[in-house]
Length: 563
Image (tube, rainbow, N blue to C red; front, side, top):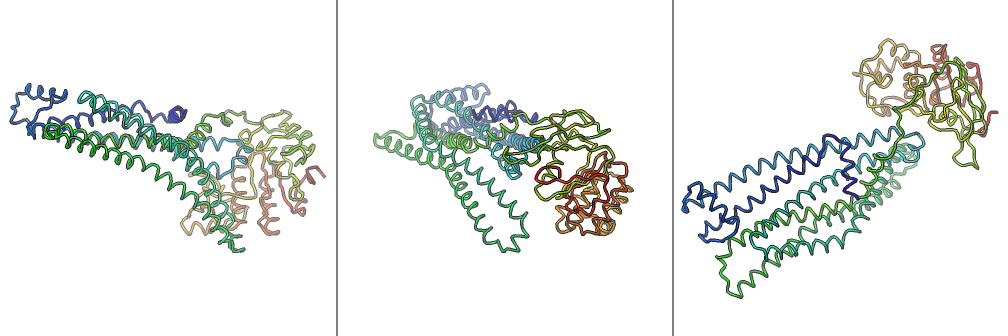
């Protein structure tokens, strides 16, 4: 049930509690009811008529107890009415402030928890889910969850408010009040029966549309060079328009359906009131006698109609957001791989790959029966054509992927569930495509605000980035962002190499991490790096077979096998 799932998700935030917020809002409902009740004796005293309602009787007794004369009744009730409304307004302002803080804090906490879970996913699950999928869930669907929480709070508070109002109405006039209750229940049920399935379907479609929109934006901006070169802007814009048109139509329909209950009930209620007054007119009923009661019911209607609308909109929101709530509930409750409870590896002697094979499809093996040994201190070059399995081999050693068959042993210890976290502080990995944070040059290398300045200066010289570092310092150390406008592709790769050198762990793996450099710079940089890492273990993947002379071991892969 969606309400149970919403409640379960909200428990992730210890600062959020329905048991605090709902009672505060219920007290506000009691304030509302009491302020409505004051209308009857107020209008009665103004018109100088008496209605023997329970509330009026109690008010009269209260005024007699205070020694207030009948002549002063209207003045005292007017002051009491205004004071009570001032207190109620101040109280509601405080409660709404608390409600806003709680709901948006909850949204932030759920986003953090989801992001944490996605970061802790294993590599294979990351590939299967996709970046756009996870961004959409953290960014868009958490917003839908927040709407569902607001709807749940509204549902509880408005239902309790209506219960209090209905009890109060029944005590005033049972027959009329009971008829009003049946009226709202009947038409509310009809409305939900008509639109419930449509709302659920629209919720799923909008979530899909948002995901497709994010995916399209990501792909378009990542491939901006090809978009420009091949003049794909019209193709891109046409496809984007198709996605946004669907999103626009579905969102517009949802907006319309959420507004519909209010105007629907207002129309029905207005027709009912006018019909009732016409009936009284035809039977020559004395309006003055029941004017306080009519005023009271009209005032109640101004409070009750929004409440009924909120309740129906809450159910509308539940149906619309059901898919997003289910998705978030599943992702928060499922057993994400616990990467904090891992055993650190000790790399003292060697890494041994024993009959290792890997495949996504058994008909096509990416790696086939690999037997290879990496001894501590080795300098190994791995070569081979594209698609020969070089990067997959590295991902197996690092624990991003698990072998389909065979064993990977570290110092003769077999690790069935090897993960990258187990290599912590023991390995550095430099991929071909380097990401840059929106931070300074030095922070992009060290990921620290306080860092070893001398070491950063040294590795900047080793990687031929000293001039770039000096230039950026003259510019006030600007943030690099994604680096596209401030650094070249080759400079980005060398920043990635600096990250590895700054840590200088036991094992360093370079995966096509010099592919954007010219041949001379690549060779000069490699010599500097290998000299700096003299006693470390280095695995270097490249297409450039001319670099073999700098390494002590060679591994050539062809069609997934050692050649």
